[in-house]
Length: 385
Picture 1 (cartoon, rainbow, N blue to C red):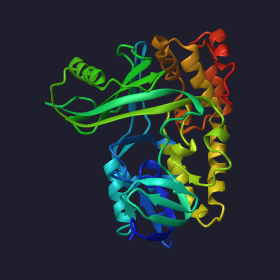
Picture 2 (picture 1 turned 90 degrees about the vertical axis):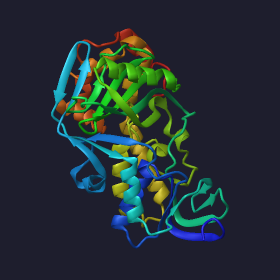
Picture 3 (picture 1 turned 135 degrees about the vertical axis):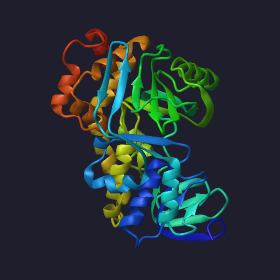
Picture 4 (picture 1 turned 180 degrees about the vertical axis):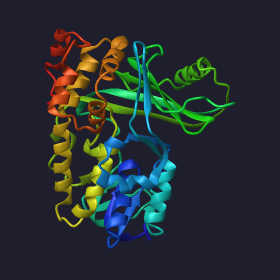
């Protein structure tokens, strides 16, 4: 029994968040011959809502997330002081609870180990309650935590599910409502209408630090709801977080080639450098895992994938450097306001991390929202490549 003796399996995934949970689901579906264990001390999926655009995920990979979708809209809106727009683009949300239910159904009883890993090695995991789990491959999916080797800003947020008497009147998600006071960097409110009476309101900041004053942000959410004329009768789930917006760093320092333990998700640096979102990368990696699982050099192959993804993120790190180093904090909204005047296809490819050369030229062309002098200064001395 795990926790008392030395148990063995084919693949041990450490961390039951988005990347680890999706990896477990993909392996269970495509490689049922493998003994897969998932080590996670808290509930799988945690207290999270993950949202994504349809264009974020290749059609061939949608089988993995389709059963997890709990909310779906055909369009979304953005609001800025000088520009509002509705974009016809599919937008979906999945919840931590949906991920947990799917993993529990997919893995045999006892294969989700409710324990914390105190030591992770390429071929074994030492558990906090005692015992050793040996594996042909260990995959570290414990998330990023802090990034001491990277230079970054932060996208930080507090979200609450509000119940509104008589309904809130929001039909489509509002991905950015930047008509609010600009505080602590670029501030916007994100709205997800979960049903006619329940709306998830997230107060979000592109800030220079990751600190969150919860009581203050909760007051701002309440003030925003009051300004909409909503009579809030209950507050449900609350979610907080801080996502790194990477502007510079060396992949070799993030994941040294000497580290032979496989990684996926944010721990591998596999996320969008400008937004911090990891769902598209998590899906791509999870759907690739069943074919990679037979490789003796799984860790090396996953590191190569992560390194290639890191190189593709160069353009987004450059944009992040200009956002945080060239734009005054209270004026950062102008960058996004200008961005959302561009073509829908370009916007979709940007969020998916697949901007074309023409897209990049278009984003950088025209009258810049920051001075050229400050933009050049922002990039100097940074290892953003």
